[in-house]
Amino acid sequence: MSIRYYDEALSSKIKSWMVDQTIPVLSPEDSSRLFQVLSYEKKDKPLTLPLISLSRDTNLEILNISRRPLTYDGAVVAYNEKSSQLLNAIPIRLTYQLDIFTKTAEEGDEYLRNFIFNIINFPRLNVNIPYNNINYTHMANITLDSTVANNTEIPQRIFPGQFTRWTLILSIDDAYLFSSPVKDNIKIKTMDIIYKESNNLETTESVSCCDNNTSENMAKFNEE
Image 1 (cartoon, rainbow, N blue to C red):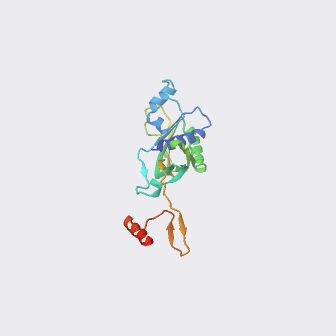
Image 2 (image 1 turned 180 degrees about the vertical axis):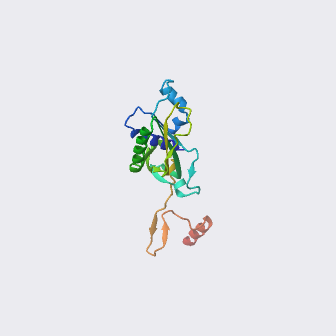
Image 3 (image 1 turned 120 degrees about the vertical axis):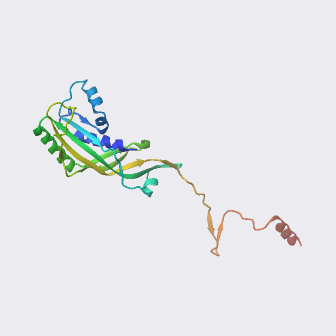
């Protein structure tokens, strides 16, 4: 599957928005093993805030479950005399959760505002699909859910003391699962056609109209 490429693209985009590049931005893969990643990066020191965490819904919504030309005979991305490389696709929807952890409510409010403006104004997401060295770039779009949740009161054991937590829900509705198979080209043998004055068609291949016995009888008839 190519879901991980969307995770990488979205994580990179969020990191590029951070003015302070030292603030941790956890990708969906990192969020699933939060303690291991931060323990390694912090060298077992206590976790500090602010912290941005991106996680993906474990459920995958397939938008098209029927066979279509796009699923088995998509775009031709590479071609030579012997084979063609296709790019087949199945539309899917991905849902992400963006959590903003800060020490104070004022700091959380500033991060929340900046993220909302950036997502709405810059929703374009460039996803690189490096299957079979084609490096195809898919242009997707991030959609922000209209409800923003304040989950500050939800207890979290990873942070001692008081903190603020804002949660944004993001979705990519124009995502695809990609496949790039290589197929052998089928060659069709053609025959040269010539036109006679009578407008009848005749092939250039020689065709025998008589069997051996008939040919011998015709030769005898000519000798007589």
